[in-house]
Image (cartoon, rainbow, N blue to C red; front, top):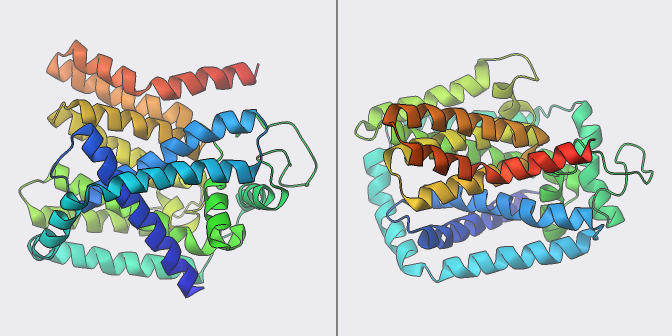
Length: 343
């Protein structure tokens, strides 16, 4: 199992890194570093899955056909990233120096706490009623070769559950299961946390850099505080801050721990650097949030809209407000369709 874990992590972070380099070149976001490119790739993978998965689900396409289409798209994204080899080599050469410059006591303390968190999740797996639905949805996709045709709790053929059909996050780790040959249940409970937890703290690293650009010590303290909050600031299993420690395979947990903090980071970037690429990336993140949970279709435009309105009033910029509204269009479209489905 260690080999499967390492190979899946290598595939995910290498693939998202290459995709992120390609996306940043298209969006003309330069000199951003490896970590930011990986985050861009993660958001791109999720957005592309939502874009492909929703129409294929509605047209009753098979899971193996979706796997072929989505895998081909991801392969093209990774191939495009290979053509950014100059930027990759430049960032790799600078990496040792940046590590020496940026690693502080706070960063080291955070890394130790993250290692403890990963060990805790691995040895003390928490299972709840959500697993009977979401993990079985992934199992049903792999073994029945149908996307959401089979009700996961009974195995009976059923109509789409309108609450979840637009946000099929379990299909993401079902796809990983099909590629690696690992059972979806094992993928969700054993391997996926080692992808989601580092992705969450990747967002906090970048947020700390954005908030405290000239103080590396504060950046490390910010990351350590974020890890402490996720570990010890809530004992309630349904609280958003606890999801990362107990159910990092559940879509709403990934939404709370990765996507919403990423939206905050991207809003900070648009407030400081109003490049077109930052706005497009914010729109991609909004679309990716819709994959994770049906709550993302609502929470994403609410968070982005409120933040953009606040910044627009402060900057007295109607243009800024219009760009923020445009970034929320994917969520608004899916929200309208969701209302239509539930009539």
